[in-house]
Image 1 (tube, protein in one colour):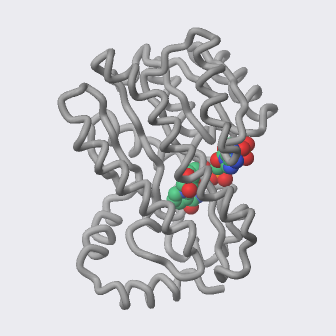
Image 2: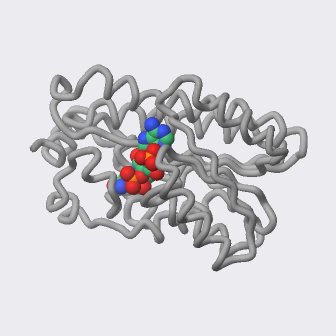
Length: 261
Ligand SMILES: NC(=O)c1ccc[n+]([C@@H]2O[C@H](COP(=O)([O-])OP(=O)(O)OC[C@H]3O[C@@H](n4cnc5c(N)ncnc54)[C@H](OP(=O)(O)O)[C@@H]3O)[C@@H](O)[C@H]2O)c1
């Protein structure tokens, strides 16, 4: 995709799953990359692979986005290296499947920080340069779990609803600036997310898991088209539209049945 050629793209959550898929596809389009996540060994290995396979510059900057100071430190490191970020992909995130009381307060604190607060801060810190240049992009990875409240996925689904809302608002606000904004809403994807969130893989497989590569591909197309919301599969569009019409109480029953252990 020409949109990404020679662009510098910051990808959070680049050490695993959908993040790795974003990086490989972006490198194939001729983008330069800044990779971030906590696991430096994985980022270094991916960077080596990308530099060998594609003609691209790759910079690794590890960062813990559950630390409120993380986004500022990351942006400072990027500026110290004199890198101008054209596009940010806010992909880092995690969930927890279980009763609300089963999850620890610390886990929820970290989840809200990574999935929401760090996304807002990275966007806020990197956006001014994009607007000044008259071009740029923000791709926020949400989830179809953000369409409706979901019992047993309560905090996660609320964080992903936040991501959808802020993406719509920024998409509207930034019209005419040359900066694209898109929220990507995947269904179940075959990544480490399942183990981290303690989602039952068999139940997820029943709902139909998707490969990280096909999800990343849809997301990159969505941002290039400046689509405010992109589902990772065509039929999920129906789920999205239904979520606007289904009474919340019915949605709670369906969502609860899907996520109850
Ligand atoms: N898999 C699914 O079914 C699914 C469905 C819908 C939406 N999503 C969303 O897709 C995105 C990517 O998830 P995935 O499926 O690729 O899962 P994954 O394989 O578990 O990858 C999650 C990424 O987030 C990073 N991350 C987690 N906590 C972090 C922290 N404190 N600081 C910095 N980075 C952190 C991880 O890196 P480190 O551990 O190295 O820090 C990892 O690179 C997430 O936002 C997720 O909510 C996933």
